[in-house]
Image (cartoon, rainbow, N blue to C red):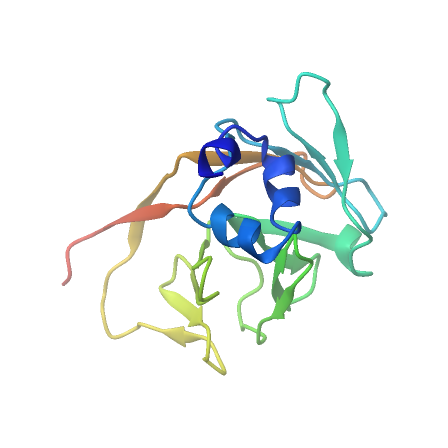
Length: 193
């Protein structure tokens, strides 16, 4: 069964999981045959998005289910697998949203408006998550508020993201946003003073 799963497209692989519990269990030991990133299109003033898989020879667009009322006014700041770190345009609240399962995790307000290159990481099994900002503020599952490591005098000078899967996104508020489905990340710091 596992050999068959490995030859399925991403969409068919996701569908197979819902057939029965043994197929769901078998799918956990396989990976979908998806080497090329998907494009996520955010139409203006609409509460859904379109997914495009360049590997698909038929060039189909997949329409998501209706998303929440703030979807058209949100910006995608970072991604981790099918999870998106979203910011409601011109508002402080952030939330994490799973595009495939429609799960939403609301995050507490932060004093800063806007994030520059945040890193989002989510464990696919436990759903533990971590968000790191450039100013070394972070939030993780179980926290009630953002924490900041200010006792160290260091700054992030460069962020490099390494991944096997990347995505390109189009947003109504920003023309092209290139993001990464993070598998791991590397931050280069200046020396501590």
